[in-house]
Length: 462
Image 1 (cartoon, helix red, strand yellow):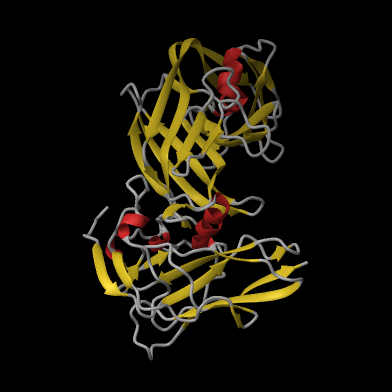
Image 2 (cartoon, rainbow, N blue to C red):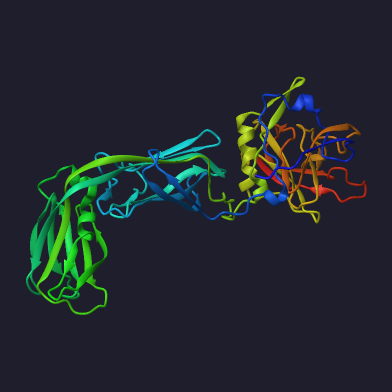
């Protein structure tokens, strides 16, 4: 991350949004500070994340892919797909399936807000299961939940079991002629080979876990057995697997010649099944990891300058404290809301936010304020929390219209940037529909500069 020196302004804040506190009252040593980036360093939209990593024991490398981020319409969160492939040319190494009694893959994520998610090692009781390709050592975790405003994970960890095979047993079936069926067993699997109903040149190799229901059958699964067979016709032509489908009890792999030519009978089906093997646990970690760019309510990538939320603060007597968690949640939602204030010709805007749109009679309405400068070239005066001027309810002023001349001695940051550092205004309104609006000029704008006008925040009191 590229940083630039921050600037401290010692000026009279004439027509800005509010008077501001001095640094010693606003930034105690214990308060968190957000990193300062130049506009050029603001991240561009990232559709996916790719990374490579080494296992904790240094023996394995893996490729990680995180993508397909989308909003979850049923919850205030997003979902992504996480895929991991363990690289190896070794033919004696497989990976444990998602239903393996030991070694099943698991994923854990931790985020900057302190929340975390974990999937596995047992299949989820609801939602899609992870998908595993045992032979390719590939796992895909679909629909992984994450906070809607998460730009990075502080840690991502995948743990898995590799099946290290010492010796193999080879099992063979022969399909003598067209129209016949061959059946047999291969280790813990029951096999059935038959031409498809469409053509005798397409073969089904169906596998299920047989009477010998041991750990290996669940670690590798019948899907592996149905798609890992070596199929050869009478002329020595190999039939390649074109995929498999089935239910929870069996999988049928479809085999055919790559050139589509007729199959010469008899056909031989061989399946190598591990005879002596062991589970080797491996863990891969990435810390931190950039995530695909969060999306706003319309599904568009959130601008990079809204990435860092510096926190929300409130006045308590002569001091500054963290704002209530409910107000922070409303403020954080600004980045993904599309109902923001109108954009002025200068690229600036004001926005009013509330937790909801319907309130009970005599219920407190808490209003959060955001100023945003969307283009480079504007100084943003971020110290505060600043008092509010120019706010009205139903056209009636509820705060003073103009700020007094007051000293500003505090941090100035470059745009594009958003400033949440304003006091929260509170109201208790009579029943009916009410419209709140915030109107003021930008920082140090001349007296004849146009006013910035916020969105109309409409609330119903019932």
